[in-house]
Amino acid sequence: MDRVNPLLAELVESLTTTPAVVVNGSWDVIASNVLARAISPSFTVGTNLASALFDNERARRTLPRWGEVSARMVSLLKEAHHDSSPDDTRIDRLRTELERRSEEFRRAWSEGVLPDDYALHVPMDHPEVGRLTITYEVMRVPDSDSSLVIGHAEPGSTSEKRLFELVSKGEPWIT
Image 1 (tube, rainbow, N blue to C red):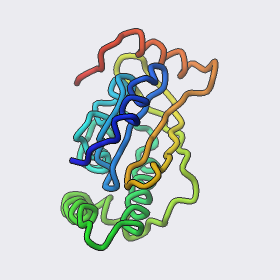
Image 2 (image 1 turned 60 degrees about the vertical axis):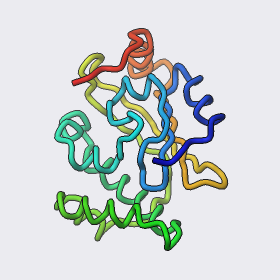
Image 3 (image 1 turned 180 degrees about the vertical axis):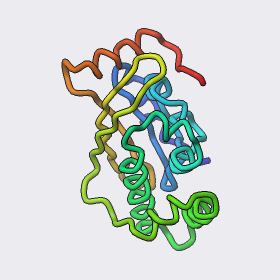
Image 4 (image 1 turned 180 degrees about the horizontal axis):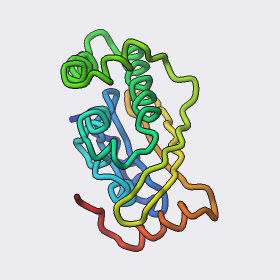
């Protein structure tokens, strides 16, 4: 598992009202804050977000726009593959595993293109607070294969109120 820069990990933890995750080049979570983990257990350190999306039936149930989210995940993986060193085989191994397990992944990889936008609006049905719509932005960490993923809800929206409700609960949900 990649190590996250300690200052970046500290920044992520300090964002108490904003879900934040740091991922490596193959989209393994290497740091996350309490709110991100409260939104989804997929944001737990050590989880590969692509595998969680394609292998976990719960993702299909809780993400009404699963097809759009999964297509974006594949495009981000393709970009990471394009940008990775020839010596780094993590994405090749992940791709092989996901192609073996998922027809949807195989199809998306063959059709996918590199992303032209890093914002993604993700509605989800959270088991404790109901429907949330979170916009995630992906920001590359300089001199690293890591990215910082920050989520936010529209100010004043029901989703923002529900995010604050998750913050007040303090503990992530487990199902």
